[in-house]
Amino acid sequence: MPVISDPVESREVLAEARELGVAIPSFCAEDERTQECILLGAMEKGAELGVENLPVMMACTANYPSHGQMKLYTRAGIVRLGLLGFFSYLDVMMSEHSPYRNLRVLPCLDHGIPELDTYALNECAETFSIVMFDGSEHPLEENMRTTAEYVEKTKGRVLVEGCVDHIEESGDDAESQITSVADAERFVSATGVDLIVANLGTEHRAAAAEKKYHSQRAREISNSVGRILCLHGTSCLKDEELPRLAGDGIIKVNIYTILAQLGGQAVAHHVLKDLGNMFTRDELEALRDAGYLGNRYFSESYREQQCGGKLGSKLAHVAEVPRRDVWVDCVKEQIKHYMDVFNYRNYGR
Image 1 (cartoon, rainbow, N blue to C red):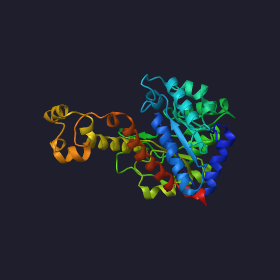
Image 2: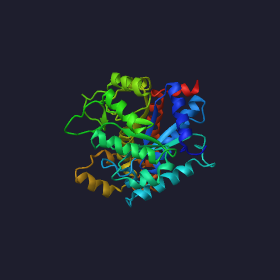
Image 3: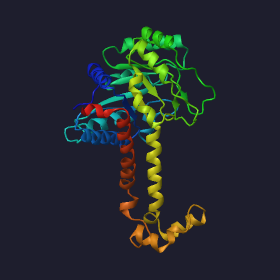
């Protein structure tokens, strides 16, 4: 099945999710490994449910100041090159030769900043299923004006997600106000967007335990403007809170930080255990003398059990593949977990 970028097809996917009581996770990716991991997790979840064509959103940021993922896609740090690589690789992974080809993949641009992302917002609009036009750094009136202009410019080409209020970053000094129903109504009426992001108390990369998701406000906004809410910032929500999001009117949930965190930690644990297959005894001793390692790596039991009896660099261990597989095996399970808590089981009924 081709990648979905036609607005009519995109609306059909969203309508189906609403009818089934599903919130669709929008997983951000900044490299090929994450892209395939998203597809692998969705394919495995589909196999569990007996559904080949599960929908999944694959998102990315471009020049977003907090974390510009398409800048990071290549070592060259060029956004255009990153976007080309992102879509080229997605096309390959969804080709007739791929085991992932039956999935319904909706690529999304996350946090398209009008002053920074002219190329992604304008020249790449038709390659995305959903584009988030983020004018939230400006006063509401200007935000609505520029968002409405973008909606008019891209009408019939892509679904547009608008941002009513600024969503906090972890570490922001000032706490922003929860979006009011009145502001959400004005924003939707003035802009004509297909989806909206409202400030519901969460934040990106949340670290503060006191952060609170305002479920009642989400329901009030949804009752007024429709079930078109997108949630940014789920780090502060507990797992038991997540299944109710669809009932609150949330149709799209952006997820990234937890994937990077768990994947990176899994690789770190793997490397720490495997250092004896990556360094010689002399190199390990130098690391120990510098204070980085203890004596475990020099024990006979470690050498026999972990290193086949011999310390030293071994190609099968220093190559990228084992670390890739550790990362993917960890992250794909988290992707499947989110599909569970966002009610994907309903696709199998």
